[in-house]
Image (spheres, one colour):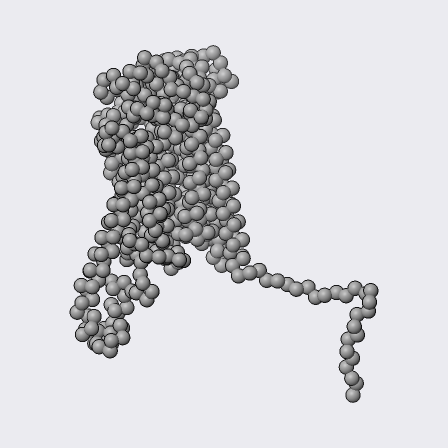
Length: 626
């Protein structure tokens, strides 16, 4: 038999090779890496969103509501006097005013402004509109609007990150990243993100409050309760329609008793904690005792039959337990409201009248004409039942609508989505949509803007599902939908406020469908801030300099900002003039005016029959009448 040889020891001076040791990543490393990638992607998307919306804001003139908000905010922070524009709470206007001060723009002390601050003007008049226009014109529109809009750009961009941070707890990291993508490619969001108006800020602070409420339910500490109250105060001071969030908050607090949120590690019971359960404790309302038959052994281990042990008192015990917990929920909401009230008073600079917020709420829509008729699809009526539903279906990209509805179905079918998560995804947008549909003026999709982040979260859930299903077609469909969204938002740049999807032209004139979707047909369906909000004067000035330099235009618009601020010579062409055959001259007519004229019985249709020389900014229609 041959003997096996022992390996000889390595000789001195001769290098030896050692086997490579493959170290496996620690548990959870892949998850941490993917989490960082998704988080960085959400931040990158929000940064891109900031610069795109900034570039868009630089080419836009003041929208309808910007001058009064701008003037009011500057007056608040400069004088401490709350006189103008009380029908909107002060937070967002104050942020605009502080930014203006940072940019070196000061409150003008003139006899007109001093009279305004004293309140020496007839009831019902609103001099802050003219004062705001003069502030913009005298300090230069570009400079003034940059500083006034800067806080809104920052808030809207940070909302994209917040959607990701909260969305990963509601729907997962991939879905949250896609939700941020849907948010930053939403033309409605992009068109309003930078304007000195209340809707973008309301949306951001509403999501912030609901996020803090979610975090509180997972670990109800006094600090988190205080932060909920702080966030509630901020959103209530963003716009009065935020009051709709109070019943939503109450509903969510109560529901979390029945469907508790997943607790965070290290959670300890506090005084106002309706959700805490001792180890091994089961809610009597849905506990195992409910599952036992009358003659079965009681699950508590007593050895008795269920009917003789807990059966007789289980119902009373459940009612008592539920009443106690819901009482704590009511106390919790009350505590949040107390903190919010302090925040509100602070944002009004602790006025002598502690009910200034209430007085302002009573003024909502008080300055609107009771005879005003809404416009939709060629008709003028006092109100349309389906207005905001139609606005959503026309103004949002079709790909985003399809994804939102798919996500809605998935939220009920996916076992990973708990009942409480589903309620957070659905209750706020439903309550806000219905409240807006019943109470708000029908002048723009912007009034349902707080609904959109929840649609994006649902859409993100649908996109994540398409990317992760085993069928190969899922990813191809997801990529196609994402490309469609990017093309939609790029095709209408920089005029996102006027965006309409392809269905707007589908029934009337399919040939008008282009890279900008159905934006050319928008005025056939809706008016006001859906198509034109006065934001196109700067673009009109550039067009006139290149194509009609020195000509005086016959200008027709519902928006009062003076064309002279941009060096445009114009005379007013009123609606009565447009109802008849036009005079000779260069007409520039707002898309909103065209929409309303076609709804007037007996009015001439020359605005629709006559070929345009140009359409400036998807909002101003130019006609050269010989």
